[in-house]
Structure formats: C-alpha cells, structure tokens
Image (cartoon, rainbow, N blue to C red; front, side, top):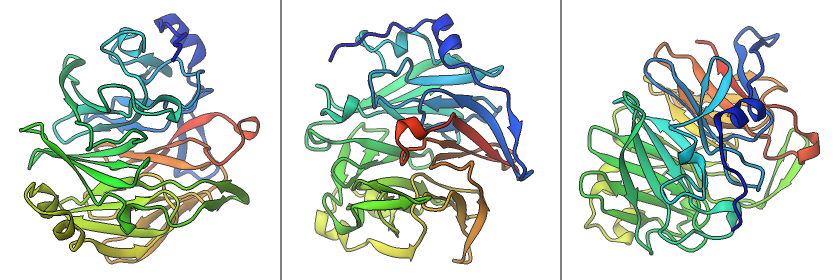
Length: 343
C-alpha cells in the first residue's frame, strides 16, 4: 500500500471545512455539518463534542477520525494519529462510539480498500476525552479475525466490561472481555449473521452487494445484543449473558439466537434510554423506530436522508446520524452530512 497523505491541520481545514448548518423544511431535521469526503461513524460526548470517521474506501481519504469544532473538521486526537505511515496510527477506521463513561472508542478494521486485513489484525482503541490521549488498545488474534474480516460496528458494555462487534466481511459477532483482553468469534457463518439478499433498491437505485452482519445495538439493560445484516430485513438478538460465557460451545450459543422482527433495511442501529430501537430506512430515505411496544414507527422520511449510516444521541435526546450515500454512484452524490433529529 502506498500512502500519500501526510495530514496537517491546515490541509484538514481546507479539504474538510464543514458548511454552515441549514434548516430543512421539516423543523425536526437540521444539517449540523457537511463534507466533500465520505464519512460513516458519528459519536457525541456527554458535553456535546461531535466526532466522525472517514472509512478507507479509496486513496482520497485525508483523515480517519475527526472532531467537528466551530464548523471545521479537525484531526483527532492529532494529525500524527491520522498519518497512516506512522506505526501507531489509524489505518482504516469504520466506526466511533462514546460510552457511558464518556470515553471515545475507535474501531479500526485495518482492512484498507477491502484488500485484506493488515498484519496485526484489527484494533480497538479507547481515548480519554479529558486529555484526548489513548488509554488502551485491544488487538485480536488470528482466527478471531479472518483474512477478509471487516470489523464494522462496536458497542461497549461498561457495566460488565465487554465489547461487542460485527464482522461484515465474514458474517460473525466478535466478543471482547475488556478486563482480560480475551476475545472470541461467535455465530461464524450462522444464518443470523449472513446476508439475506444480493441487492437493495434504495430510493429507486439498485445497489448490488451482499454484506453480512453490520449494525448492532445494546439494550439499555445490557441484557441483549441486537444485530442485523446490511443486506437483509431480519433483526436478531442474543443474550449478552450467553455471549459473555467464554466456555459455551458454538452450538450452545447458536441455540440462543432469537428472531425479533422483520424491519426496514438499516445500516447502523441505536437504542435510546426508553428502550426504543432507532433504525435507518435505506430503501426509502427514512428513519424508523422499533418502539418498546414492538411496533415500528416511521419517524421521518425525507430525500435529504441519503443512506443513514450510523447513529448517536446527545444528553438531551437529540439523535444524530451520518449520510454516506453508499448506494449512489460518486458522480450523483451530494455533500455528506451529519443530520440532527431534534427531540
């Protein structure tokens, strides 16, 4: 891999300057930030700091993780961390998450351009937002990750000290004991982690692809992990108590998988504090909510919602999501946006 981009603060400001926020006709929708570069993940800290990440899906990616400050996109935690030529740096980040302890977690697939996982495997970093310094880094052994793995999304259980990830390259869930640093691969090639279809029709555009387990969400009581394939409509869940038991066999774990409901095709997912599960609506430019009573509500539908990718929520209940426009040819894409849905 030939890396060409040495990140500087001035370069970031010129290349990734966010456009002024604008209000959509629907007063519920507000564009918080825009970029010429494609982003996927979004995270909001407890004091309102806004983070995004840019996946390494092309050679034209000047930064991996950034914080939006005063309408500008600034490399986080530093330009050096975003210089892939350095040993300790991001290589191909797919998601960012802030946990209940206000720490930022960064999941690095280390699979740039989908050309295979780099030596050393995927990494999961945790940053202390008090000083913006890396607090810990987790690695995964071969077997837990596979040559074409793409660790996609992550959820952190601070109460039980576990992390859960999806592998959308080869369908599976990854379970990590944060105290021991031990991890395991579960539901590998299980029907619940496998893609269901070979395409989606999103806003009239046929997107031909087949992507396995992608979005995940941890229930507010930490008892269940929900997950779904990107190209599919079947939402599944499994007890986290089962996942945390490192002694159970694959067969014992698979026996505990529950089919929840058929839902709109979604990328990311997120629970709010009331037990409602927020979902995208990739096929009709919408945001949906699987309510705690089991009913699905179409929260908002608008042409501005061009592939809702990842979700985050601030302390007042406002919902944020990125638009990554994955289904559109590049010459048909508009600005990538972070959109806020007001509570």
